Amino acid sequence: MLLGLVQGLTEFIPVSSSGHIVLTRHFIHAVPDSPLLLEISVHMGTLFALFIVYRRKLLDLAGFALHDAFQKCGEKGWLSRFREDERGKTILFILVACIPTAIIGLIFKDTFEGLFGNPPFASAALIVTGIALFSTRWIPATLRDKGKLGLFQALGIGLIQGLAIIPGISRSGSTISAGMWLGIKGNEAADFSFILSIPAIIGAFFLVIKDISTFYLEELPPLAAGFIVAAVSGYLSLEFLLRHIRKGGLSNFAWYCWILALASLAAYYL
Image (tube, rainbow, N blue to C red; front, side, top):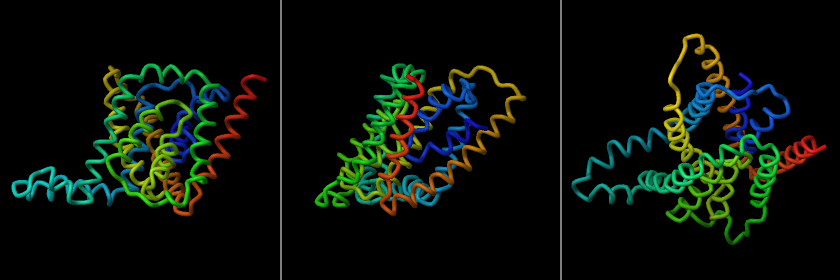
């Protein structure tokens, strides 16, 4: 349940869930190396929270992709239908953004996973996350909220998401900050960031599920508990963050990242 709580509370709030798990395992020893099934369970819990919060937008996108786009496919062509509709553009941008994320994940997966046993590195990465968050205060007025999601922005956000595999780098914080620096409004950057995380989570699920060879019935209660705790805490943290972003308070999370990082480094070396 503790793993589910840590995962749910920090998966969406831009303070790096992976960094928290690395530090919690090292300093508290309350979150041991978890069975693969349990880690999958808590990630599915946060995925469920995403589906709940974005259910209307996801249903709208799915409805367009499965019905509207193909209904007139013979008239203008499949790609043209996607290009002329905002929902279709969003789907295309998600697919484009997934390309650099998938490439980075497949090439550097083992390298990044090796960093999960390195608390000082995770602390240093948290400092980088804090800088990215705080930098949104410095976005010039000529750039702030002046752009819109396009092919270039989608590729940039997808690249940043791929690098966020590094423990201590917040996926949500880095991608939303990148989107804002690319001229996208904070709430729109957040919406794209979180919807983009859905295929990334599903892709990671299929990468690790192949390593599971056995399942025992007695494992079901802790798996269910982890899923429920991660789903509930994930839903609450996501709603909290979205309200905070609408008020322009994304950079405030930088202070938490810096304080945690410096305290962790001090505890590790002193």
